[in-house]
Length: 201
Image (tube, rainbow, N blue to C red; front, side):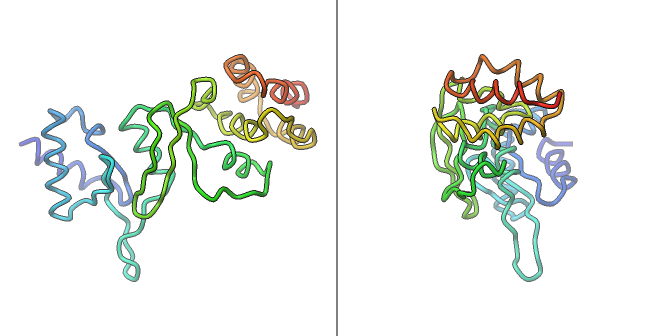
C-alpha cells in the first residue's frame, strides 16, 4: 500500500474534530511527502486546512456547516507540531482560578517559541515568548496555578484567596509545587510559600 493510501486510511479513522499536522504522521514516511499528501487531501475537501501547518476533520452541523475547532485542541495540536511549551497566560489563568473577575480581552499564551498572533477559523491566539522561569511548571498540573500567581506581579495576592487555593491542592500537586518553587521568579515565591504552609496536606 502506498504512503498516500496508508495516510488517507489513517485519517479516515480519526474522530471528527481531530486536529493534526504532518508531525503526527512522521512514521509514515518523509516529512515532505506527508506535507504534499495532506495538502492534496485538503484540496479534495477530505480534511480542512487550518493554517500554521495544522489540519482537522471538522465537526459539522446541518444548520451551521463546519464548526470551529476548540481552543484547547488547537493548542494541543500546535504544541505537538512544534514541541514548544505553551501555557495559558497570567490574566486568563487568574480568571480561570477565580482569582479575578476580569476577563481578558484577548487570549494570551506564554511560550518558549516565537511570539506571534495566530488566527485559526476566526479564533485569535496571542503567543508571547518568555524566559524559562516564567514557564516553570507549565507541563504539570500546577502550571495554571503558578500563572495565576504571576497575575498579581510583585504584589501579594489577597491572603484569603491564597488560603482557598492552598486548601484545594492535593498532595501530589503540593509536592510538585515544592519541587518547582526555586525555578520560578523570585517575586512570586512568597505566595507559593504561603500556599505550601497553609495547605491541608
